[in-house]
Amino acid sequence: AQFSLLRTIRPWMSMSACPSSTHKAAEIQRLFEWLVGRLLDSGKALFNSSHIDDGVMYGRTTREAFQLENWTSWREPRGATSPSTISDVGPWEHTRILLASNASSDYIWYTTSFKWYDVLVGEAILEIETQKATAVSAFLEVDDDEMYLGSIHNHEHKDGNCTFNFTFPGRLLAPNSAMINTVHILIESLGYNNLIGRWGSSSSAKTKGITGNVWIKGKETHESITRCLNCGQQWFSQAGLNGRSDGDDPSPANERHGGAGAHSAHPCSWSSATFTVPSKGEFHTDQELLLRLVAGRGEVWLNGESLGRYWNITRRPPAPPGQLSQEYYHLPRDVLKVGGRNSLLFFNAIGGDVSHGARLVSTGLAPSKDSTFRDEIDCANACL
Image 1 (cartoon, rainbow, N blue to C red):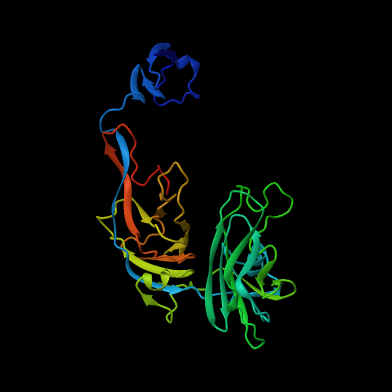
Image 2 (tube, one colour; image 1 turned 45 degrees about the vertical axis):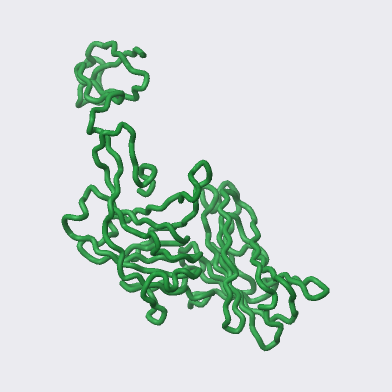
């Protein structure tokens, strides 16, 4: 046990504002070693953190809320194709594109086309020089035949250069002067290393996007082949994605397909769903609505407002194997249409059926007799 001097104060006066003439006599109070704080009024304990009555503790609980319905999906059109596309010799840096386009996006599409005259044997490599905390998806198109080369990410909390290598069969490159080879590259910025952002403590701005060279490397029968794709070659650079449009139904009519799995299992795809929030009864003012997502990596919009990124990335040990770093995402009440239909829009860069495991839950604090705070959505305020 510990002993300390506590000064009683009038409940309507703060400690700092209380004149010394109004202080009552100091009392010696017995304090337990696990005591964090206590509030006294005329010797009576109004609050004592070392003693909690039954029913005073609260835990965060969840329950199934509203159904996600009317799932549709469509693919993201590949490459820099929008009217705002910038054409230049070589690809532009991410922030430079945003400023020139008066846009705001974590995504940049790059496209370049070239002819190939060498017959490659074995595997070839598409090598892209970028920055850490970046994700890259790459596609190779040869006379309208498309191949997905993969998606690679680096999420180190560091600054610096990073090189991503995509391996593919060298025979896919058409060694024919009449055929065109096209590379489409989607760059995702995963943020900057510090809270200061793009500048940090440096006098020069940090860069994102394609920040170095892009190479194709392979082998002929007797020699190695290396070709630089941005050494004096035309590139198209575009801020943002192609597949999103405004309105209640955000999918292009000619691409729309019923069911989330139809296109969403493919990389760089879109999905949408709707749900209705009743005006009374089922959604109380002390409840918050959460969206559970366990598949894919991308961005989600509620009624046209971006809610930010989602990612099914797992935690490091000692967390249990396969445990996601976050699976619940907050749907702000001021964006919800209470008493009407709400729309959710998902972009998924890496593929996987977004609808798998997706559900809506309501959450709030409920009285508990357990002295340990229980939180069914993991850590307190994780999604809030």
